[in-house]
Length: 198
Image 1 (cartoon, one colour):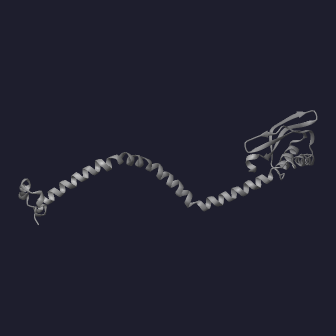
Image 2 (tube, one colour):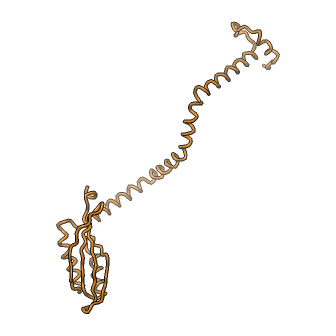
Image 3 (spheres, helix red, strand yellow):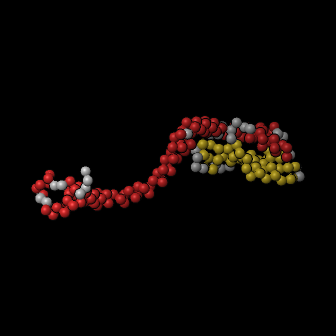
């Protein structure tokens, strides 16, 4: 069917009560005008209010995409993370068992004295210092002063490191005296704090 533009001239003479009998061309133009009016009204009444929201959501898209990629990476590697967490928990439990309890700290002094005398050192001072509370643990410092040779000092430090409980050595000071070499050192052991014990 061809579109006859000449029939559009009859639009001024059309009767709205006889819409069913209007020519095809007129009906097409009226439907097109109605569609345009409905589209414009929909845009201004429905769509235009939503455009700022759309812009905001589109601005969030890169951030959401990167968050999704991070979470996707975690989800893909979840089993590896769970295995790693289990290993870390085992290591942490093992380290906690290496910390002396309140009952074991006097025995720790005996162990340090034993490894020192076994290395051939002479103890001049072995004294507990005041406890130092940290966020997750408590430091138990021990001030020591021993006399001996370099090799004996090395054997002593090595033996202390090999003890079943965690003991670290700090603030080394070696001096030459008339009696030989003198080593002043602060040893620290640790006790779990309230946050770790929970």
